[in-house]
Length: 376
Image (tube, rainbow, N blue to C red):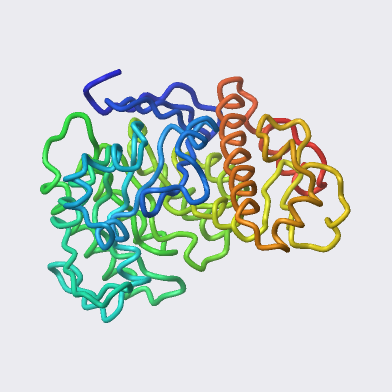
């Protein structure tokens, strides 16, 4: 254990990086996938289950927790770690993305964003300083600057305006965060699908000397090829000795391709949301358990998996649970999906350690394409 935040780059294999983040509440092995616990819970999972699957850190959402139950209430109850029974590291986003996508009657200016809650219509103001204050009340370990995320496609002038505003908000967020040795605040690279703007954003943030850097505003409507092109030109600009976090991404293929381009951290609602809707991620590819062809399939999702949800229940039974509207269906599929994601990350880390990442990448992708076993 340590009383400070630090990142150690342990190994590289091509563009892929193997590292370790050390914090007072624990160590994060990178590349890492962070399950999303939007409102203080990873949906359909017990905290102990999430930990047992190999998660070193989870994500909480500033916007949702601010609205309900309220950041001040969470602080009064001991902070998010105590409140949610997760004593390990927690990362919180700034709330800016949800303000843009969910809130009603938004008004944005230099100071911040005023908006109405999508829950009860109450008016709120979110500034860089207030976002950092809320994240501090939640007592998260890694915090995000407030930024403005523009949906793609968008005009270059609009992307540049939002990027420049996000840089000014980055300075204010960092100043509000101050010096907290055991915690970190990350800057967020914006610039849409424009390489010039991405380069300006990354360079300006690197000069601000954040403890880590996020890449935001991707997987918001652009093709995967565009996302990967932006990563290829952005990650080399960011400091080599600092962690890199690609926000809100993504599919297993997005993850493995982004690792190849130097990304260290990921989060996405996809494995949990897909699980609640009958879609399983496996090393054989995706399996839609709502499909009638599974009604008499006695096979489990993966008979060699260490996860009971993947190994001990037939596809026919999982199909039945979804057709019957049983809560257990979402629980088992979410469990399976998070197990697969953490297994994928463990496989990626081992492959980088052993200088075989490219072979692992190609073999894994070929397994998804063929629907047979891709060794982890």
